[in-house]
Length: 213
Image 1 (cartoon, rainbow, N blue to C red):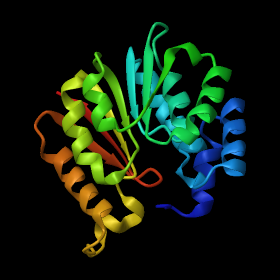
Image 2 (image 1 turned 60 degrees about the horizontal axis):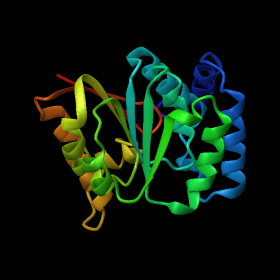
Image 3 (image 1 turned 90 degrees about the vertical axis):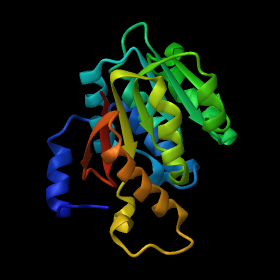
Image 4 (image 1 turned 90 degrees about the horizontal axis):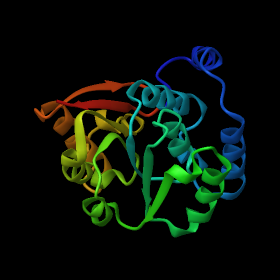
């Protein structure tokens, strides 16, 4: 979803940081071999994630929704030298694909994959985090927030992807559209919850930055 004319969007991308070669390779192979390649964060949003991570300089990162590993590698660019990135996904078919690219990067030994339901895994993680990225099933966004907020350090950042949901957040809600309903609830939750301060950015399909107070 583009919020500005395509030519202007291309100008924005052209005048942002270049996409690293490893991520270009990951993108090509994702489009060649994996279903729904549009789920990939992509060049521009990836550079946004990288920049935010570098500004936060997190010790520990949590990612909910790995897909093929693109966003994890972007977030890892800002991680401290002795830091860890824990990424969760329910799709076991992508596990080896992710691992291949993690191990090709300089962050391989610092990236830990968790396979299964995030709502089961997160409470068992004996860590607190400085940066959390949510990009998984939209129906569970409110639940994810409730389970991660106590694991986020004060001053830590939550990044939430797809919060505009191709503009469906402005449309009349259909009875069977549980994803849009959950996102509307989630966006309202981030706005009202006194534990965080939030700004919603119209980047691609909507990216929210929330900071724990």
